[in-house]
Structures are given as C-alpha cells and as structure tokens.
Length: 182
Image (cartoon, rainbow, N blue to C red):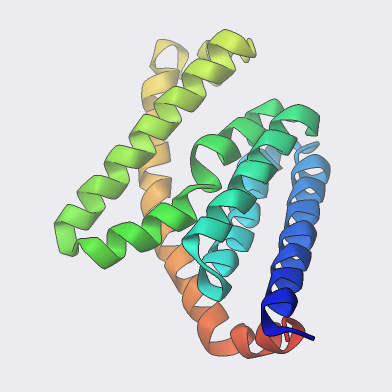
C-alpha cells in the first residue's frame, strides 16, 4: 500500500474514532451535572494526541468536527459550549503558546485566552441557552465573582495537570499508540 494512502487512512481512522469517542463522552458524561466541565476536559486529550501524532492542522479539523457535532447533538449544551470555546481548542493553543513564549508572558497569554473563553461561554450559556448562573449557590450577588475567581484558580491546576498528562502520554503511552497507528 502506498505510504500516502496509508497515512491518510490512519488519519481518517484516528479522526473518526476520536470524534466518536469525544461525542460519546460528551453525551454520556454530560448527563451528570458534576461532569459538565470534566467531559470537555477529557475530550481535549484526543486533540492533544492529534497534535502530537499528526499536526496542529489535523487537530484543528478534529476540534471543529467535534465542536459542531457536540453543539448539534450533545444534550448538555453547556458542556458543548465549553468544549467549543476553550477545552477543545486549548490543547492546540497551549502547544503554540509554549513554543513561542516563555515564563510569565506565557501564563499571561494563557490567562487572557482562558478569561475571554469563559466570559464568552458564560454569555452564550446565560443569554442564548438561558442557564441561570445568577441564581446558583449561597453567594447571592457574588456568585459570578466567586465562579470567575475559582475558575481562574482551577485553570492553573488544569494547565499543570494537562502538561503532566501530555508528558505521561509521550513517555509511557505514545509507543503503544504508534503501534496502533502503523
């Protein structure tokens, strides 16, 4: 078999399986309110693997496919919005940011992207999807401020954990995935 044809077949298979698994995870896990944010985080790992094994262009196409399909068919629209606006694209952006910048400047850019994404997600979920964030919790009128602050704190842990998961993938799991992709 021609190497180009084989490479396209492997990419197509990986893309189809990754997209299907992402949609299943988003649909099944999204049923549980505690998994609203965990499901898109887990699905972002498929994007990171696509960047590592293929390239950012392929990963972006996979991200777009999962975003559009999840917004169309996943019952938990909040989960789909957070995937589309942040957790799906961030694995691609993270690699680019970390290759082009260093230190504190890298973190400033990441936090700017995160905050733009969560504000956009909040506006879409609250205004278009009518999810009542203002009525959540015992914090009353400070609920949004609390959510924003805790979200920014959680982002620090997410970014560090994501880096460790990617590192673990490269050093422990990549050899097994490479065998499957041959």
